[in-house]
Amino acid sequence: MSVPEVRNVIIIGSGPAGLTAGIYAARANLKPLCFEGFNAGGLIPGGQLMFTTEVENYPGFIEPITGPELMGRFRGQAEHQGCELITQDVEKVDFSSRPFKVWSDGQLYLAKTIVLSTGARANYIGLENEEKLKNRGVSACAVCDGPLFKGKRVTVVGGGDTAMEEASYLAGLCPEVMLVHRRDDFRASKTMQDRVRANPKIKLMLSSAVVDVFDVSQNKVTGVAIKNLKTGEVVRHDTEGLFVAIGHTPLTDIVKDQLELHPNGYVKVQPGTTSTSVPGVFASGDVQDWVYRQAITAAGTGCMAALEAERWLVAHDGH
Ligand code: NAP
Image (cartoon, rainbow, N blue to C red; front, side, top):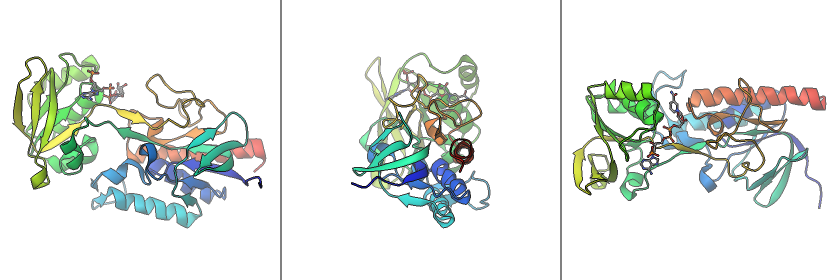
């Protein structure tokens, strides 16, 4: 069997981070290869933006652009600049020695540097109707979708910092925000809790869970069923938006034994860089960021990763 060519850079993932890394690496003549994913384990071509409808906060677009259209443009630009894209998942990697090894569809690929941009997927409650009404009133990102709910009553689920932040953000747009949390205590920092508790537009339903979402027959959210977990009583609450803020899961299955991770599962990078615990392996986008999680910040770190990979190649490979 012939030995595969050693690529300068292999990019894993094709959301804003991976494709921006592709654009920059291609322009630096590194002839990058990007595995854009095929949908195993949540890695899908285009990333999380493929699940959003209108994007109104990506700079450069006066009119709203849909998530899939925006990612189509990222992809087209990466390809136009010379980034090779393969619509396959990566099954396994070995970063223990150089060149780094990447397996996809049973085939081995070799690379001098890696940009890991596998992202993170939002956690959902797991209800059948929640799934059916995603993007039709069910969202996991208030900053992305909140303005579409201006003037409407909305519901937020969760008790962490994200839920507090989303509830506060939505209260700036909506007349009423119902915050539903499964326990009596919030996990969120005290400051963020205090802000929520002091906001007259935010109402709390504690020790409660959303157990159903209506109304699939109308193809939009009209209400939720909320169960009091202490009494078992279920009530219907009218609402036009359901924001699920119960955490994200970084897509690190293929690297969890190879790279140092934070206790919360996200890939550790040296602050202010995209360098991981393995020299030559860079991580960008949501797989290493649980705080900002925006397309623009992911794209920014994708750019950083490509520039760092290029510098690394110059220093170590005389590229
Ligand atoms: P998180 O801290 O893990 O909180 C998730 C929340 O969702 C918890 O309250 C949890 O309830 C609840 N939950 C989990 N699974 C659930 C389910 N199946 N059904 C109902 N509720 C469920 O996640 P996060 O709020 O996204 O925050 C992630 C990290 O980012 C944290 O470290 C946070 O501090 C940080 N963050 C910081 C900022 C900021 O500083 N500005 C903003 C956002 C996030 P329990 O509490 O009962 O487990």
